[in-house]
Length: 537
Image 1 (spheres, one colour):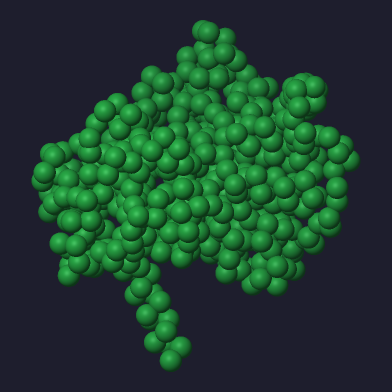
Image 2 (spheres, rainbow, N blue to C red):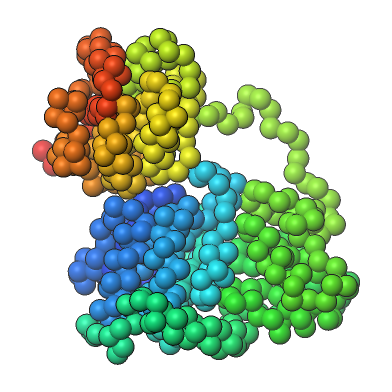
C-alpha cells in the first residue's frame, strides 16, 4: 500500500531519506542552509528509537572524520555541512576518496548561491570532480529523499563516498514526499582490507590507481542513471541541459505547454558524456541551466566540438552570480523580461541588526570606547557569527570577517607586523570550531594581542544549537596556556560598562596574550528556555 506524502523541506527530506535508508549516524556543524538536516534527525522518532547518532560536531572536519570512522565500522553514515564547511572538511573529503569506505557514506553539502548567509557562493561540485567522486544533485524534495537510499547503495557498490549537493532554494522549500519502508541498520563489520585506511605513500599510490580505474564504471553508472533523463522536443534550434534544481525553472518557463526543445536533465555525475554529445549533435546550440558556478558549462567546452555554440553563465546569457530564478531563465530563453518594477524604497529589505537585549551590544559599546575612540578605526579583527553585525551601524566596531577562526590568526599576523593595539573578537562556538589553534600559536609566541571570546552559550546565528564551549571556555584557555592573571570573565551588562572599559584598556597595555570572556546567554535562547520552564511549571 502506498504511503501518504508528507510535507518536508529539502533538508528534512534528506534526513528522512537517510533514516529510511538505515543510516546509523549523522555528523554535522550548524550552517545555513544545511542546519535543518541535523535538527530534523535530532527530533525524529525513528532516530530516537534506533539510537541513531545525531549530536553536533565541533566543526565540519571532525564531523566528516567521525562519519568516516562509522563507515570504517561497516555502518551507514552521513556528514552534513554548508558549502564553506566543505573547505574546512576538505582534507578528509579528498583523502576519503582514496581510502574508500566500508559502510555507505554520503557527504551532504548545501551551497548558498546569492550568499543569503555566507561569505561566498562557491560550487561544491568542483570538490566532487577534484576528488573523482560520484555526485548526486536533486531537482526536488522527492529526489532528495530517493537519492539518499540510492546514494548509500552507490557508495557501498563502489566503496566510495558520495557527494550529495543541494542549494538554498531546495533546502528551504517544502513539497510532498512519498516515503518508503525503512531499512534495517547495518551490523558492525570490519573492512575486508585492513590497510585501506592507512594512507602511507605505498598504499595511497595503489588506492589512487584503484580510484582512477573506477572512473569508467562511475561514468557508465551516471549514463544509465534514472536521475539523468533525456527528453526530446520538436524544435532542435536549441538544446537545454539543466542540472538539479535548474530543471524546475525550465519547466516553469514553458508552463503547461511543455518544453519545445530537447532537454537533458542531469542529477548524477560524472557528466553523462553520451547524453550530452547526443543533445549537442541534434541541436544547433546548447543552453546550460545550472545553479551555482559554470561547472558543467566549462566542462562542455572540453567535451564537445569547439564549433558547438554553448551559452550559460560563462557568456552571461545567465548572470554569472546569484541564484537562478524563473525570470532569469526565461530571459535566457529569449522570452520577455517580466521582473517588474523596482521595489519601492519603503519596502526594501533592511540590514540585519543585533537583537534588543543582545550581550554583544554592551560588548561593542565597551570595545569602541576603549579602542576605537582612543586609537581610531582598524584595530579589531572579528569572525563569523551574530557578532559580525558589529560591522554595521551604529557600532562599526570590527574590521574583518573572512572565515571561521580567522579573527585570532589575522590579529596575530597584524601584531607580528607591528600593529598596536590588536584585538580579536570571536564567538564561543566559533572558538571551539577553529579558534583554539590560532590562540595556541599566539600563546607560544606570547603575541601582544587581546582576544575577546563572546560567550552567549549557544551557536546563536544558526538557531541556538548547544555550544561545545558551554561551561568550558575558562578551562580551555588555561589548558592552552593563557596566564591566569590575564584571563578574565565579565558579565556584559550596562551597570558593568565602566569596569568593562577599564578591563579592556588594562589588558591592551599587556605585552602578551590576554583573553577576556564576556559571558551572558543569548537573549533568544534565554527566551526559549524561560518559556519552556513556564510551560513545565
